Amino acid sequence: MPVTPPHRLATYPYHHGRGDHQAATRGHTMTDYRIVCTEQTGCTTGGHITAVGTGTETNSASQRYTVQQVYNLMDSGNTFHTYGAGRRANVHKWNCGCGVGTLRSSADSTTANNLDNLRICHWK
Ligand SMILES: [Zn+2]
Image (cartoon, rainbow, N blue to C red; front, top):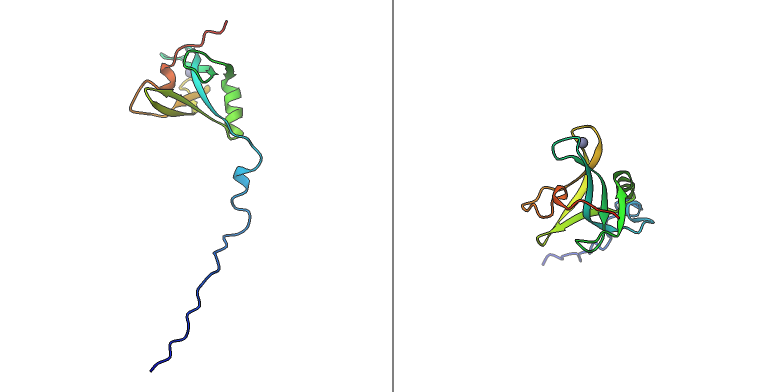
């Protein structure tokens, strides 16, 4: 009878180097802002967005952010989105055809959450 040597179970987890997962999550409290209205300018047919209003209610913006402020918040790890017809769309940086940095929402099957279709902010 051949003697089968006992198997050693490999119990050592793989090490992929140290600290790989730390850099991305260090330090920041991230916020997911909902954009409820926009300010636009008419450099093209539809214009581009120059500022946005954020808040939790469709008809009431609680905070105004210029595009540059949104960019800064995005660079710090925060996210922006729109919500309509039961669906959300992520908002990201986009360069308008006129060369100005602005914002656009991700393509979606509904236009209800399209950033360009949100109401215009009317700050008092
Ligand atoms: Zn433009």
